[in-house]
Image 1 (spheres, rainbow, N blue to C red):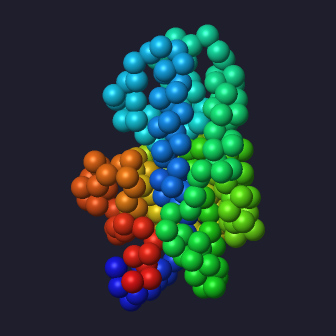
Image 2: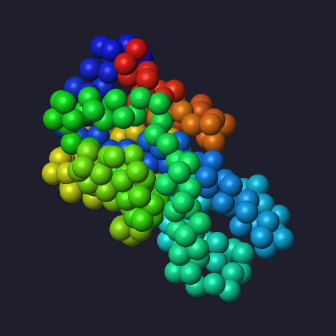
Length: 223
């Protein structure tokens, strides 16, 4: 993507809203590891269709799905607490920003473009990730799917984030790494840039078909 393409992408855009995992943060490997440990600890076979089934679900939705599908004795809140406890240290030490994401956030701040996050992750892990990365003050609004009634591809998480930012949906640009997220942004009436991620590379063609733009990572925006 050429520099003038980036300028065109940001033309008439007053807010950028990022998905977190796989988009802004290189963190999907953390969840793959946690899921595999979850099933290994219970001597259960890892379901091949798990990622497909939970794509777009929020933290609470996923916990409900796990409890019902795998007949877990723990309550939904206990499942969520277990995930938060297990993932917290990994988000503190292992989760990193995608290449050039920090530079792109700085560029948006220079241009006076407001910045939001709309994620399926938990508030606790989002807050810790932003704190560790020194980005808490750079993000103007955070919404998780747990804060709304439905997960992606429902547009609500993006519409709520836009409302928090005080920006009309058509003036928002979304960055997403999976089809359900891209559809959520499109369903909200926003332009969407797909982002490559190792853990969704098998979905690349579908993502490119759905999105308005596509990047391998944020370095493309400075080429």
